[in-house]
Length: 388
Image (cartoon, rainbow, N blue to C red; front, side, top):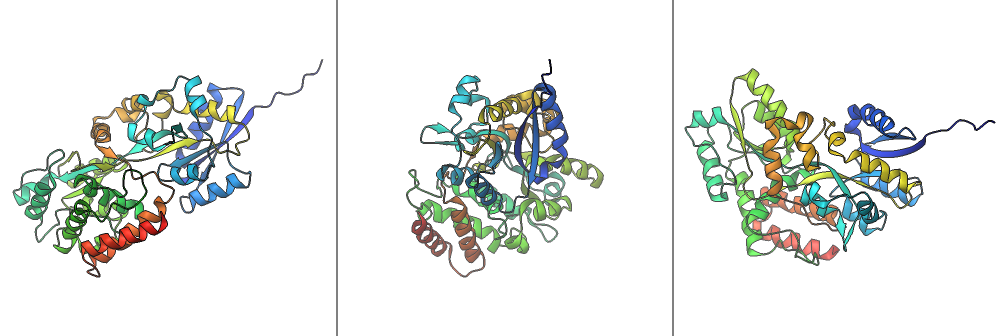
């Protein structure tokens, strides 16, 4: 009797294009773990990622599994393009406490969970010990006050190097938020009110935070070029060249700086960021047009197992147990597990993409002297309130 050939069930999964080196491992390992399934990882560019994802879902051409930056989640959830994962979570015994809490919370709205985080990053404060020794200044400490941090920047800035670096490029608003948000939160302020109904950027605390951040630039404690800088593209090379004594640094760069420092002959350290670092990451979701939700659930549940997600070489896992496995067990990464406790996420609102653009534009106006920090704060709030 002829039964025919049994073909595996194919699952498609979108990842960012920077995951190219991980595709073979993902596809091979999943096929081994589940012989009846195969996953095809489709790599997508970051430019217009969420717009392309929404178009694919609405057109019925979405992948079975869609990975999304946590800042993209509010837009996709708000447009009702993602399926709740609560039944999957319950049936597979998945626990919230197994993940970086701030990222797990970013995937929740109205009591439902729409996303499960698999990668996490937050910047800690890198500092060049050799430059501090040269300037005869005490090293920064964990979560030092902003008053002490400012004094440290002033003391360590010399004719040969700057004390710190900020990111203010209009071409990368998310990077600007990584640079600015820790100050805003550290001063007890936030972008929006608790119910996300209006801007909170015109409060006295927020104005004070904006003034502080802008003054680092206007008082020449950071390079003049910072107005057009991003962190990895610009500040990181300056740190490697010992032109900046301190910068916010994510886990993906810490190994690079370690190797470069050994070759260049300088010593370095890293401490917890003043205030709260901006938590960032990517999560698994299932689009409403997924062709096979049960198969998608099998794939996601497989991937978030600590022994699987820890095999990625791109960025720190969002699963806590995985942060102690594989390459992530290197003590170099310990600071980022600690920083996760002192991290916050930008507001989960569908309008966030527009909001961060507005904040960046008005910060630029304050940096260039077009407006005062207070005027910039009021303009931010007015523009944000118009879209909420």
